[in-house]
Length: 498
Image 1 (cartoon, one colour):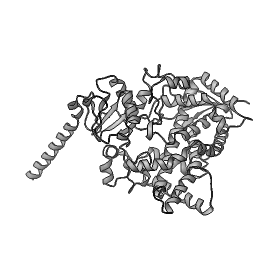
Image 2: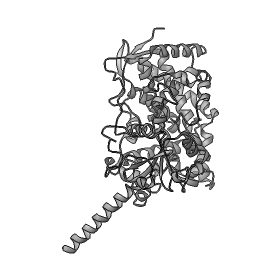
Image 3: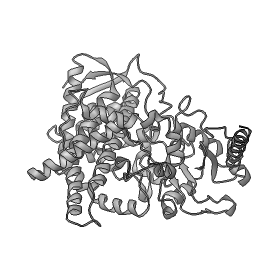
Image 4: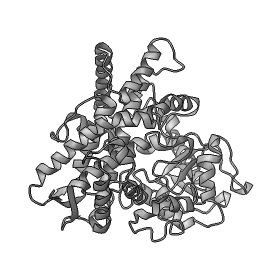
């Protein structure tokens, strides 16, 4: 017994030494940082007081202009460099991308096939997959998919109209979320989900679970985030099993139906099936396996569903508080229609609409920080400020978006910040809702398109104003990684007389 006690004592002592040694890393390097606390490191406020992107924003504001171009940070036990210098941001994302091409996030293709997405995979596999999927999101492909988007937007307007025979206070985020779910259900899976008329549609419920639920109830997230390679070696999974089973089934059913009936819809799934057929024909260099196809369809839905609907909700929240901007936008929309009809070209020509969306994404970048991982030791300018191989690098997009030296009066909602001349006058890498460089969001054009279409239909037909239930300023859900409004967004909605 005494031997066991002694061994336990030695093990505990060694673990304490390892933790203390790890938490002294940035101090030994002379890099500015906050003192970490066991076991969360510098994440003490996460999930209870501050959203993760807000934590990184505050860190950026605190250490911007300090002795190093980055500040030290501890993500639990993972040493992390939070970039505070715009030149280094540009180097990481663009100039020296080859040293930062990986995100260092968890995926496990063998045991958790839906986790091996274009967002998460690394190295040569990422480069090959990005090359295969890039033609999917050209302007021509967007134009082909526009009729599907417009059809769903027609239903969006009818659904809102049915809810406001007289002015009513509505919770906006759920309603626009069902719009984006139907758009992506059509474009990515070829499914008429009808979620706008059926709030309990399984497709939408599974989409919400995919975004909000974590395997093990999130209790092992610190391990998946902090030690992704070890988690993969232990055959751990992040996707909830019911969500995985549902999406694998509907992807398989969709593929089998289209191949059997030779159906073409000119959507995202059509393009994935073409790559799948190449794989079946033995062309593994240009093709996609079933698991790869399913993972890309899944991330396209999860990313497009949550980010676009959240952006629409935040945009309406701001427009309700700024009636002059809402009126100006409505005038542009009405003037830009041909025979009172929307089209791909008419939406593209609505420059103020795009500025409204871009300013919304500045104030509320749904993914408020970007991560990269160093492939080798990297020294930007001063050798003392090198970033060690394997270090996670965080680019605090929310912090950059609220930097008053870049965006004066950053808390004000001003779409004119995104005229061509204003954009040209700002440094590169100062608007990052979709990232930048070779690993930016491949679906950004589609996301902007469906957001602009949804907003155009709503602003043309309805007036949005602040209600007693509207929470100002916005409160964010602290435990979420993405920016989301706590308790929804309530606005008064009134049908506009024609």
